[in-house]
Length: 174
Image (cartoon, rainbow, N blue to C red; front, side, top):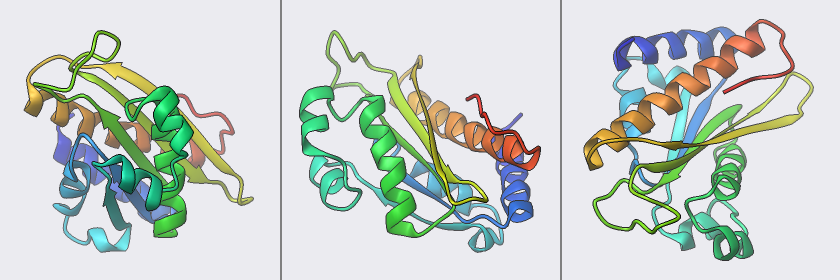
């Protein structure tokens, strides 16, 4: 399914749920928000984004714990999950996706190679309980390819959450 079709499906699901979505982005530099807002009428379901390229913004705006940045690094599931939770709080929304990764060509280490991306999704259920799911992916290609694949995975993951919530499922697999 192409990105425009995936975004349209997500928009319809968010409208059906009555949800507002947002993003917290590092390696994509606002790319997820760009694709979501390419959809006409996106203001009905998309609230905004925090592009948190620096660790200072991750901490000061999104509330990522400094110790976790030191212990696990910015490219980690722990940090991505905190970014997603921070987006819920800062943007006052129902659901969020956060990404942090190594898009390349530089910035890689032996433990965190180019193409390693951590994604996290957070949402509040009908009872007000907050949920978070996260994953790490190893994507192939150059900087543009890694970023575009990350955008697609972020949108597809949010669609899976919307589908599960719409179906009344308590567990969501990403």
